[in-house]
Image (cartoon, rainbow, N blue to C red; front, side, top):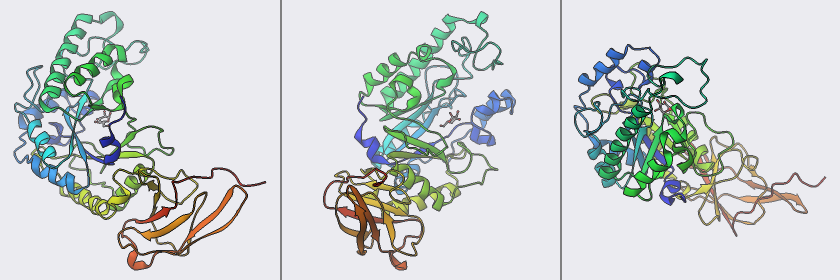
Length: 416
Ligand code: GLC
């Protein structure tokens, strides 16, 4: 599938990990899988999950204020608890929490993403097979696989029928613009029947976007938590937590600052990616203030610099400018991000064409600039005067460099 332009233009999405794990504030699914929380205790959260103050319109307004153009909600994590009143399987929250979310996002003009875990560590038929080639000496986890001699292919077929039933509900009812799969590592592409799964979803939503955990059917790379040093070539999305947890955990106050979030964001979009920033609502559906504030802070920065954000393409590769940059879709304006206040003119290397103007995005103040040096095919260095203190953004200042033609870069090492 060719990538949907809305996705690459969007730049920011909000990931929402919401589930029964928010009741006790334990790690989503992994806490029982890894025997950190007894299974019974983990599952007892289902009866105590209230969603009592769930206001999806407030979520959607907050996400729009953050500058996001889409969101992704955990419709069913590895623990198998569905957030909608599914007719398949035994585990769900007893009502439909997804319709309100999808409608509210669409009211705000945001695209609707649904996270769905391939793996389901609670389904009675799930741990009925193992991944081909899984070394027998590895300790098997009772929630995810069985030893080769206990494989039960009929049970696996039942699991897939359950999975397909849920997928039909999700795709048919909510028509997601994006399906964000996870948990693919437990089985092979053939065991998941990825091709058939993609076709099933596309029979409802022909242009649904898939992340890379849809394996051969994935549309974009899905780096998680670690910011890439070399940006992936094609479309990609960095998923990142605001603190250190995906879901709500009371004790985790290790939130990234707005400054840091702006930096993650600028670097991600500069490398041609999207940032999928995760919030963990409490069990009642409210988003912790510490997270909401940061989303708003990031949103303020994005609003001030929207021209350098939405619809842009990846900017200069490393080595040309000290910081990230983006490029306008017509490739004639470069947006250079400055994290710190330059003390002196700052240099940009390797620009082959002429520069028409350099201005501070926002104030529009024009900055002096000149090209110095250069020999034969190696262009000189473009020196741009530092912006005045009054023109500096508290988080990161963006300089728009208008070029006479489309961006052309010199990537050589000079003349020897
Ligand atoms: C991991 C984890 C999961 C989390 C996801 C988000 O794959 O299994 O808990 O939802 O990453 O990317």
